[in-house]
Length: 164
Image (cartoon, rainbow, N blue to C red; front, side, top):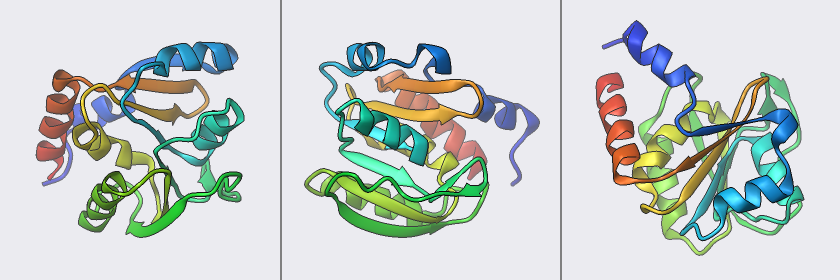
């Protein structure tokens, strides 16, 4: 079943707090992720930004692209690497299985995606423990910080169910 226009619109809106690019500072981000169970990054630029702030995400999901242009994976820290395939505009079963494996491994883990990682934040919202934080980029706007609660997990599961 194809996604409804309402579901597609919901996917475009930030799932958490949008911090405008000009306001993304080390102090601001560290204060927002303080006391989190896990810190998870989705996106190459998001991961690179966190690492530049001295934060090594427990799991970082990257596709080697930024706004559709090739870029080097941020590899400035040592991490176990896992790989998966996830076609553009989808959440593949393979990717979900690899994300689950990554969350079960000793951190840090880097998941390298052949395809596109953009929508993989959605299953992560449902999979990470409550009290965790998932960060991802909102293209040309800033960084989205999602504090995981039972309500966020439910919202993510419902949206994934509608998208199949």
